[in-house]
Length: 245
Image 1 (cartoon, rainbow, N blue to C red):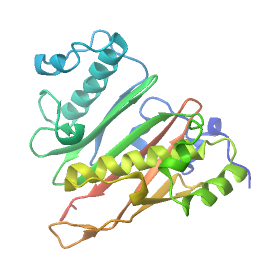
Image 2 (image 1 turned 120 degrees about the vertical axis):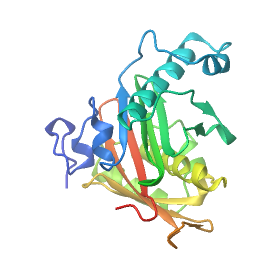
Image 3 (image 1 turned 90 degrees about the horizontal axis):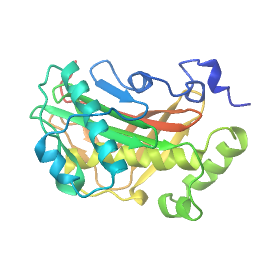
Image 4 (image 1 turned 180 degrees about the vertical axis):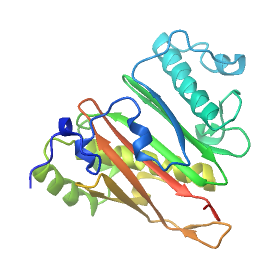
């Protein structure tokens, strides 16, 4: 079966949905608020505490830092949460306002953030990457043996998608969802990713002890969604909170 063309934009298929403004919203449940920008906002407001973190950084880094936080504040505003500094915490995880879970991502030409009330979501992870091949040797470093033949098969059947890069992005989204919720590290080798190439979905089976939620559920893995556009790939995870409707 041939991979569908991104330009045809059928929303049920991951490879059909070329990246466009508002596309990250389509990867997340209605309880999540998101914002994205293709490029940078000039000037983008940052709080003094934030500016101090990148005072010595190169201009490109300062711009992407400011723009992704502009996305985060826009998303927070849609959630009814006032603007506040978003400072890195343990292992660089964003420090969200009380009662909020979220995730941010940026790559060349794209910045995005997604947030939700912790009454609705227990964890969110989003990641965007350039839609190109991983550097030589990186796939072997970030994948586990069962994933590699699956990536080979997907590449043979759907060559328009860089599945190695999509795998890397999915593992980043898994980490971004896992660590803020558990405060436990997770390596690339600790999650087994399996993609559904036609529905734009993936599953992540965790290879470490799970995490117990307040309602008795145990997080042993994640379900996520993905898309591949001409220039970027995006993956997203939103884990329903205990007792969320």
